[in-house]
Length: 62
Image 1 (cartoon, rainbow, N blue to C red):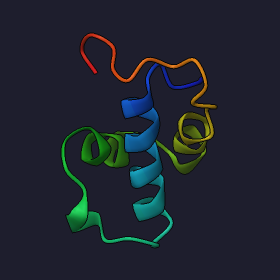
Image 2 (spheres, rainbow, N blue to C red; image 1 turned 60 degrees about the horizontal axis):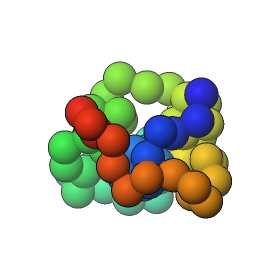
Image 3 (spheres, rainbow, N blue to C red; image 1 turned 90 degrees about the vertical axis):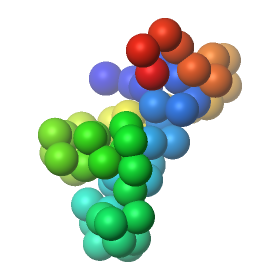
Image 4 (cartoon, helix red, strand yellow; image 1 turned 90 degrees about the horizontal axis):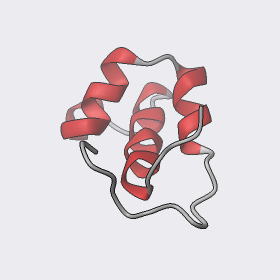
């Protein structure tokens, strides 16, 4: 499932980085921390790999 906004894509990228051990989990905040806790690495990869072209910066509830 692709990300719906640039903010969501970036949060997924941060969570994916922590899931892979490339960054510290303690550095995550807000949506990226929630994504880390509730999504698998495969799900995060789907969101993080979304092309940013044409995505809004944010969507309501994002």
